[in-house]
Amino acid sequence: MAQTIPVNKITLYDLEQRFQLAQDRTSEFFDEWQTALLPLTEAEKQRLDRVQLSVANLERRSLLENTVKLAVLAPLLDLAGLFLAPFYVSTEDAVNIEATDNSLVIQGRIDILVLKEELWILVIESKRAEFSPKVGIPQALSYMLAAPKRNSPIYGLVTNGTDFVFLKLVFEEVPRYGRSRQFVLGQDHDLEQVLQVLKHLARILSK
Image (cartoon, rainbow, N blue to C red):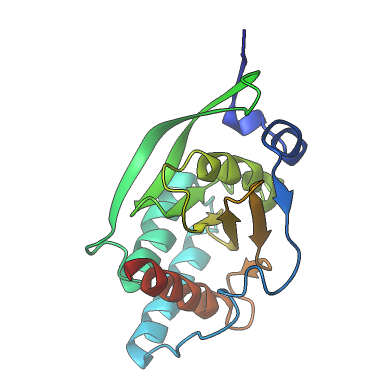
């Protein structure tokens, strides 16, 4: 009988052992977050400035998950065109993924799912400092492994509202994934780069 565990308890080691997931650390594997990024307009930059001011105000208390969705992710998704066709946003979807040897079932609910079923966005709480994007990477990869489309790359974004990590998953003989560097809101032009990457992925997935 298969063991069932909640997705927030899964580790990268579990995914490596049960699903043969492997990390590809070469820059060529996941270059979408670095190359061919178009510059933002002045209007887009000004909107992002307002986002950063909003977050600075909210951080005086605590930046909880629902507030992250409202203050940070909603403007980013809107500016990237991810509320428009061919995309649509589904929230709090139940996802089950079963290990290749049928010994393990991972259960969970994804916080935000942007579809064409090829871009998954996971929001983790930022109330506690240890809830960094790194904590959410195994969870995001679990959801991505359950994606119904496997003939093209799957992309993901893990964020706590102030830190962002992009993921790419490819299904081949064994599933391989790569990750971007960690972008930090308020650091240099990182939020602008996050939007540039989202817009670039939207262009790729709209084709």
